[in-house]
Image 1 (spheres, rainbow, N blue to C red):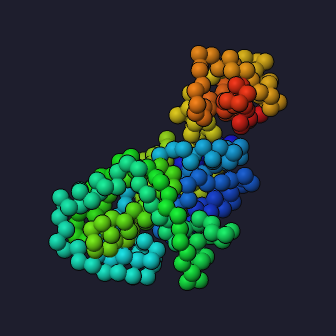
Image 2: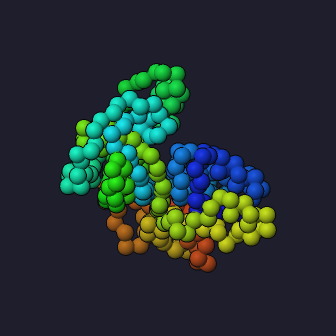
Image 3: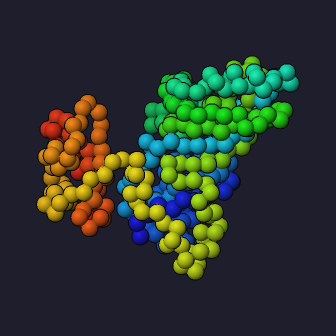
Length: 298
């Protein structure tokens, strides 16, 4: 069984708990997830089955959209409601105009400091392990892209925003930064992932419903083909000779993808055979001026 499930993760469990549940109820050995959600967060969590576990790395290139509720006036050490309060401030005088001005500062390229309570490694150890031991270390800032940031509502002391962003964006860090800009402190109280690449929350299946469907063996219609997350890449149809070449790991000449003049950037193509079946992902090798079969699916 190869493909991707658009699961609506419930609150209170980890992303790996979702993987374990799917592995058990579908009786699948090869199961993985893309884009970890915190235990308290809900929403779109793509679950990859079988050969689709080999395309999880391509999820990193896709945009994500979140709806976040942020409480102003209280900052915590984790950036969310699970942490200890480290600062209190007065947010009563903040109006919509001020909020819109501050939010505007966080659109585009943004430098973020990852939270201590995150899975980023420091000398081989996840930061959250150090944080739980009371050890705070300096973290390097990371550049991220926030493509869209909208104020949905403002009901003191909570603002609700919608964020579309790139990989590596921490909404908890964004909430904390907004609180600092408003000079009152803030923390994330609720987070829902509305969209991840082509997967939308309106089309997602609740985990409990997936379990019920698995008991009736009625879930195959929910599985997306493994190339569905690659539709943002251009495609090419290979002849029989070229198909055999990439199946055996051989490089293809630049002419294998017609009318393309690669110039100084990483170029990938979805490759299909003459029967329309997905064969793999081609990556252009500039040094050799040839196409490398980056991923091949037999």
